[in-house]
Length: 322
Ligand SMILES: [Zn+2]
Ligand SMILES: [Zn+2]
Image 1 (spheres, rainbow, N blue to C red):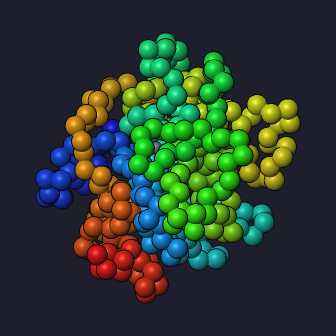
Image 2 (tube, rainbow, N blue to C red):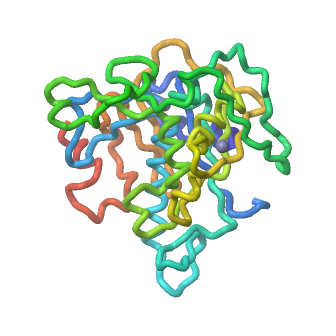
Image 3 (cartoon, helix red, strand yellow):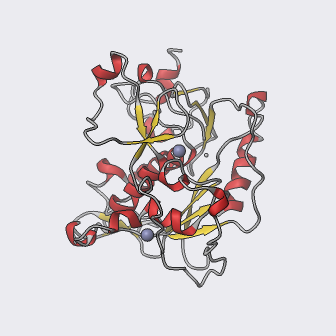
């Protein structure tokens, strides 16, 4: 998964001749596997929020990857015709569509996701339980070694790292942020944890699709089996009542196969990299480049062919205003 992602990223970047791309921070990719045989920056500021959904709020690599996955799902759904076989979807029992059972999705991130998944000292890493044998999936053995672990956390506007959601935290409002409240964005770990409960397809696609869960999660750097298991799924299974009994079927708490790369990726750039995000998803005509701190699209060609059907609503229209 790591090799596929890095190869894809290198091929994409080679198409872009701009020195702004020197250096990279975090690369993430989602790989679809058809059978057994078979990209991080920052967040916008509150002032850049758009009520029309025209701004990319969170440009951390794994979040951009899931955004590309949604675009892929929409594109695949548009090709579905009732009564005709589709390579990816089949009807489920409740009138929705589900992904065919032979198809699985695998997320790779070049380093631990921000938030709870990165909340341990790298010096403590001695439990390398990740299996490189494709037939063995080590069971999750979550570690809860301190009371700051397992909390939901947010990235803070203008800040580095993540801070815990405090008791009594109220959901932020658009007008509050316009009055100067600092925008807080959920950490990537918390978002992955959510995908492991309600699926990666999001609320809108849940009207049409059964939940789509990750089959595996692979990290490049900062891998710790116990800490990652806690952070991305197992912390939700600690209640007195089994979480699965509270979730309506087919929703469930998903425990993906966790793994690390065997050939380590070189450490990420330490010098300041530009807050640019290079994004691509299967079906796009070319890479899209967005500015992570402004949430706007910088590319001049149409990589979003499926959204052209809705004039005035695509990213390119916003771009022309800048
Ligand atoms: Zn992140
Ligand atoms: Zn788990």
